[in-house]
Length: 155
Ligand code: HEC
Image (cartoon, rainbow, N blue to C red; front, top):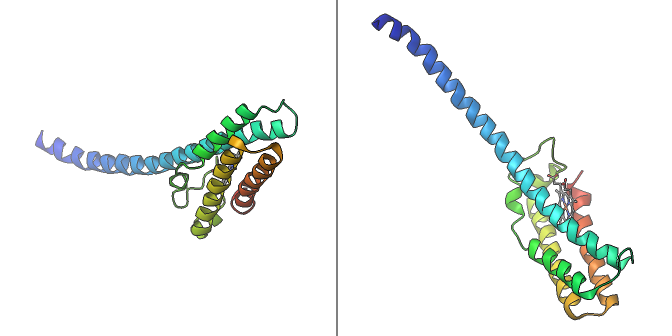
């Protein structure tokens, strides 16, 4: 009996270590996927609101100041959330359009996110009591803040 236990001990230990290693590596991949989901989720929130506002400005749907202001408010709130934890170092994946330049110039990436926050809160203030021309300008500036980041850091 003793002999058998001794013999089986080693493979069991090896299997245990192997499964430990495997769970560590899948946890890593899992964390990346979660981060990608989070950041893309936020991007989709931005997009939802931007699309609604630009459709109104273009006359694709009737302009309604209250609805517009609500979207501007939501965009400002969403772009005040922490986006950067959604970009842990080197979190590239097949599901993602994020470029490696993000982690080479993280300070600049952060600055571009800050610029969006400022543009969006300005848009929200303007939409609350501005006239349509000023609101249109503020919307354009916000769109530029999206594009400035995508141009450099998104596939
Ligand atoms: C600080 C940089 C930055 C700013 C600012 C930014 N984005 Fe992005 N965006 C990215 C990156 C990077 C990706 C790719 C993310 C990925 O696929 O992992 C992305 C992806 C997207 C996507 C695709 C999401 C998906 O499901 O694949 C949309 C839509 C989007 N952004 C819209 C916007 C809009 C609208 C704005 C402005 C209101 C904006 N983004 C501002 C960096 C930014």
